Each structure stands twice: as C-alpha cells, then as structure tokens.
Length: 228
Image 1 (cartoon, rainbow, N blue to C red):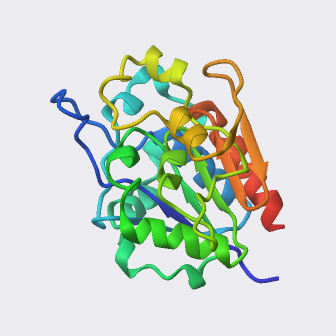
Image 2 (image 1 turned 30 degrees about the vertical axis):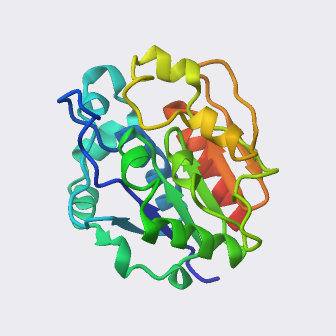
C-alpha cells in the first residue's frame, strides 16, 4: 500500500501578546502525534509560515511538562533537525498530502488563525475529502476557514478545543487574541468538552479536534484510524 503522507503545520509566532514573554508551539502536542504517526509508517512533512525553526513555547520544555514523547524528542537529533528546517507554508501543495495536523500552543492564535496560506490549505484539504486534525489551541486555525458554500468550516460540526476554564487556569484569558471555545461556538460549532486538562477528542466527518495537550495522541489515533 502507498505510504500515508501527513503535513504538520506549526506556528512561527513567538510573542505572548504584550506580556514580554515568549510563546510558540507546545512540544507535547507536536511530539506525541508525530511519534504516534511516524511509528506506524506515516511520512511526515513539517511546515510553518516563515519556514525554518518554529518557536517552542519555553513553558512546554520545562520539567513539569515532560512526557515519554517529549523526552524521546529531546534525545532525537534527526527529528530536531527536521523541525529546524520546516518548509514555508506558501510552498506547500495540499495535493501532495493525505491529511493535515496542527499542533497547538498559544502561537497559532496570532499567526495561523489569520494566515491566508493556512486558511486556503485547510479549505483545500477539507474540500478534497482529506482530514483536518487540530489539538488544544490549534482549533483556532479554523476560525476563518469556510466550506465551499462559504459558511464557517466548523458550523454544524462537533468540535472541541482549549476550554475557557483552561485558559483561565493558565491566566491568559485577557492576553490571547480570542478564546478558542468562544470562537468555535460563535462560528456555529457544536462544542463539547471534558473536565479541564482531561484527554478528550472529537471526530466529525473530516474534522478531528482535541481539547488540550493530554488529548494530542488521541487526535493522532483518530486521524490514523480515519486514514486507514
């Protein structure tokens, strides 16, 4: 059978609003799905708006947030090298891939949520019957994406994403450009969630969404099963 090709799209944004602190993507949300899919034989390409090394959220690299997957990544020079050389989103053709996956972290709320290349990629995957998977803050990238009939992509779809309670928990409610839970509801998504920080993922047709970092592997599992 043909190798399954999956595109991972990472943020290039590293400023946490006006706080003077750094953000980026959350390592666990990259590492858990990456290894889950790679270990099953997927061919993964990494892209970001600016290309090159996407910023890692420094908090996600702290000892408190290490998992077996992030520890594997820390020892894995080959994947670190791959990550340091992401291709530019503008150079990506959705036709080359079977699915797209967006890891979260706060970064995507600033750049990918309104990046025209990202929006058009998401729409292209969706309109060609290819799965679009996002986790944690990454469902924010669906904000401006539309179906062929120009209604919001998430309208009438079962979705989840980082909860208002979780954002409150990390004290960034007033820092982020928008709240993922509120946006999904405002766009007509049928939003559901589990308790804060518990693993929870939802699949509805081509859309797969996960609530928080702990949901990353669950999203990858749903995506893999869908592609097989």
